[in-house]
Amino acid sequence: MTEQTLDGLGPVDYLVIEFPAGEADFSGEIAEELVRLVEAGTIRLIDAIVLTKDADGSVDAVEFEDLEELGPLVALEAELAELLAAEDVEHLANAMEPGSVAGVIVYENLWAAPFAAAARRAGGQLVASGRIPIQAIIASIDADDLADTADEELGA
Image: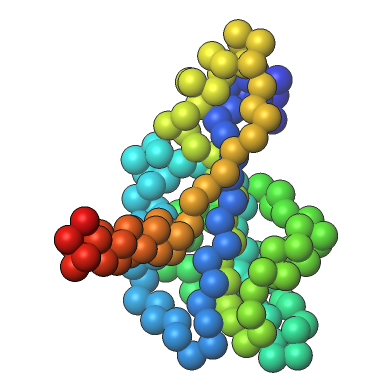
């Protein structure tokens, strides 16, 4: 990447989506949505791999280009820049349960690139970021609903 390209780079994130043993239902919907996000200019896919963690804990990583059937992802594969190193794969696989399969994507948030570039030009730098898993949000809402129900029953 050139310095000019890097100056306009948006935030780069990664996701690891785990599919527990026997629970995966790959209908092609995930691939279609990923292609839609890229085509809409929301994200730029930088790297993508599939991790398989055997029951004994051993991990196999497969780059998209090595998969036999890419379906709609074939349009994205040519632009991938194998960014993840072996150490990264090992670290990501630690979060997985034995017997599971995971898809890993590294992507640039194109929607945020102009904001990020403006912040850098103003002398700012990203010092922290995070993501709240949807499971935590659902649990929090459920806990609030339970508390509200308990308060109503007590007449509070």
